[in-house]
Length: 126
Image 1 (spheres, rainbow, N blue to C red):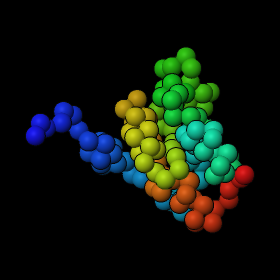
Image 2: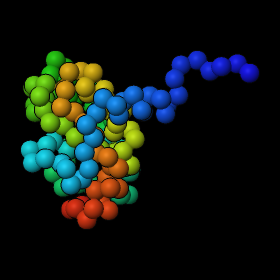
Image 3: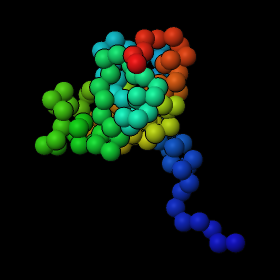
Image 4: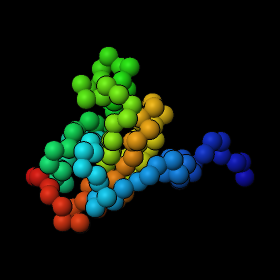
């Protein structure tokens, strides 16, 4: 048996989450910037969180890097309280760790993702 090169996705996810202070839907602080990274088809099928910024995963780093010419106007500093979410909280953990790599030290993700938000009975849009 030949050993596989690199780390497994489970190892990468565990390492990302070890760096994050993940929040539950009830723990999302006032003033937090909720960022929905789900693709359009998934948002259309599941719904959304009112007021969340929609920034699909493939452009997230460019939109939040204060040094990027493609950044969002809100992304002008490194202490943004960004809470990234996906459908179930897996991709968002990797995305939040990537934002931390850019220097956004408060970036984290929503444990359980949009599905946890919905189960908690919090507001959703269609």
